[in-house]
Image 1 (cartoon, rainbow over the protein chains, first blue to last red):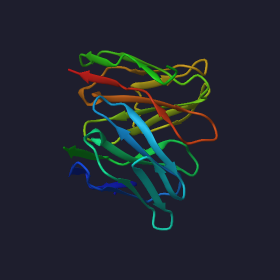
Image 2: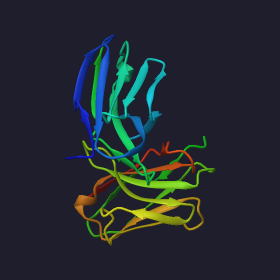
Image 3: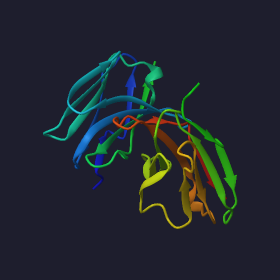
Image 4: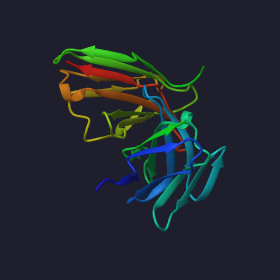
Length: 109
Length: 113
């Protein structure tokens, strides 16, 4: 079992839909990261959180430390949101990231 | 632009050849990380440096792989005697002490024929 699990692996949506991507982890963490990867490889950090909830524009990230679970929500999805969204955790004693396998999101107009 | 840069962006090589990749981190960042990503998978940790010291290496980093950060600034990752299984995207990231947020470079895509 991977230390970081994401679901779903693939997601298609119509423009305007509300989207949720889930992440569960099985190790102790200092922080959880949500990252976005576009075709070609570039990875951008969206959120880093260790408790509660963060919001940036149409993106919302939440984390439940007791349940070892996080969600990434996209409100009013748009075709430009199409990308791979990756959940990653940084451990208690190390800053290296442990990644999930990613969720490929396609938003159609 | 003062982001993380990697060179080359693409490398095609024949099996058995040696390759070297370079990463230039954000200038004020003292931590530098190397990750490898194969198609359809999330990145996997290879190694990381704090200044010039290599603090951690993954079991994935076989004897054919070596990484250096001689002056605590740029880093190189060398793969000797490349194998087809080495084909992947090699990602570099950097961060500062005190935060786990990492900034990623565009990656170097390696294809071993």
